[in-house]
Length: 303
Ligand SMILES: CCCC/C=C/CC(=O)SCCNC(=O)CCNC(=O)[C@H](O)C(C)(C)COP(=O)(O)OP(=O)(O)OC[C@H]1O[C@@H](n2cnc3c(N)ncnc32)[C@H](O)[C@@H]1OP(=O)(O)O
Image (cartoon, rainbow, N blue to C red; front, side, top):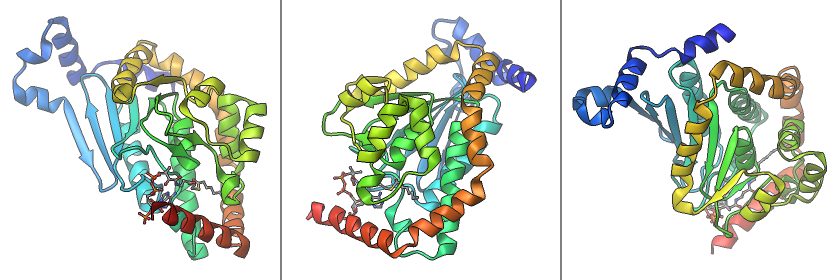
């Protein structure tokens, strides 16, 4: 692993080109447009857009699944494929995750993927939720969430898998694990991720009450690391990334792994049981009823 990490910090041809260009005060300006184009790559699925700049080693993943970037099976699959590709590309050292949708980072799990669906669908869906979490939480890359809107439930979970969270300082936005408000119990690994982020006591209260926090409250309890004006979320994420990139990869990666491995191992060794629990729980009549009512409430709110 240390060797892999070492190789990762060694610049390839593209890295060398970028180092050469950064020696000059206007490196990119002296390069031919074709060479500059080679240093950036972009891939777009229906649900996400990933821009990777090889000269910095940083990729930006924009969630673009209207209206609210809810985590559907299709969305989760696209995210997992993109993460896998980035993880395998040794020149990619950092990933910023943000939203292209106005006012919302992610509304969490797609309720329509849990409501009125067959047990087979629920199995596929939950495996994809687990996979996304495992890939983000166990990533070797530096991950920064640029939370430019509300981020309830699974959206909050997604941001908590990242190494650092920057949120838009807009009191209309909220973030938190609000599952109990929907009559749902957050799974143990949602709970563990939150404990690792804000501590046991705060998590216990937050989960029992299904609390959604304003950005100022989230900063106070450590659920987010920094608040900035809305139009500065992405630029601040980029600046923060530069600081994190200055730390040697192998030391940072091993430290991250040391901190997160017990939590990751717990889910890895209980994946099947966790899927079974989910299906058993979510297909209960009472849970289906409360999900249906919640969906109605969301739709009524709009009218
Ligand atoms: C053991 C079981 C564990 C299961 C774990 C579950 C974790 C979860 O993630 S459950 C999902 C919980 N999510 C929420 O509670 C968020 C609900 N949504 C909102 O609070 C708001 O939509 C928002 C704050 C994210 C955005 O508000 P805004 O006013 O901008 O938009 P809306 O008008 O409310 O919504 C627009 C549109 O989107 C639909 N929608 C919203 N959230 C979801 C969702 N999570 N899944 C599917 N669809 C969602 C909403 O119904 C509207 O649809 P229509 O345009 O068709 O009316």
